[in-house]
Image (cartoon, rainbow, N blue to C red; front, side, top):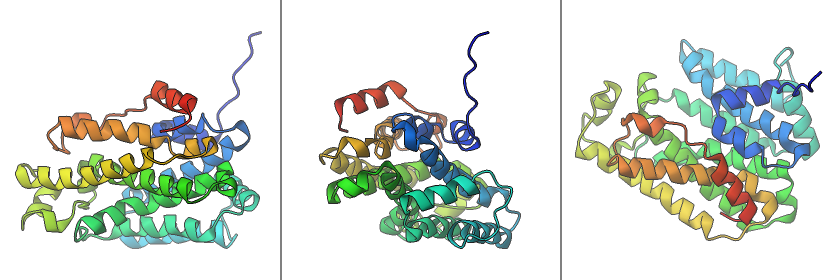
Length: 280
């Protein structure tokens, strides 16, 4: 009989379905920590779904507190397939509870109906979750035990870029949930209303999108200028994919509603080439 491939874990299956970009980056991590990375990134998928699934903000905030209790207080969580592997990863790698709590705090802002005030606020909103996720991934990879500020700075830069570009790619999706993630200071008086109505067009929208996309590109340029340890690369590979999303926005003349912007750009061969070279 032919050998059967082992079934993917719940975390890996969830990630492959809902966040293929990060799923592929995990495949370049050492085998002994892949499941822990799958669990970490799958947690991000679970948290990102809460805003969409909650019928009202209070229900969503209660669900986020459920995760806080399960992971940080060790209370409840029975029956959820991610809780046990996440608790084990927290124990094994001594994951920073403040970073884990930061993931939850970032998702609490999903329920804030007001757009960010300015580009700095918009970047902070977009980057909070990805930066914490990247630093936790660095800890799981073990790179933070050997590395210094260079690796952490590179992870923060790449994660910030990924978060900003992710918000730009998801403008239509967020609008359907009643959220505007572009900075109010760059939109006309009725700009947020137009985005929520799905009829935002014109120079002001393009300008706001370009301003944020170029901030992301500057983060990517900075990350590529840093020499990092090879062990840290799996936590940085979203830079390869982020570059293609930034280029797609540029080709669309900074129109975030262009359908091809949301298209998956996993680029497995480019990821493999980056790992083989040993730098971004």
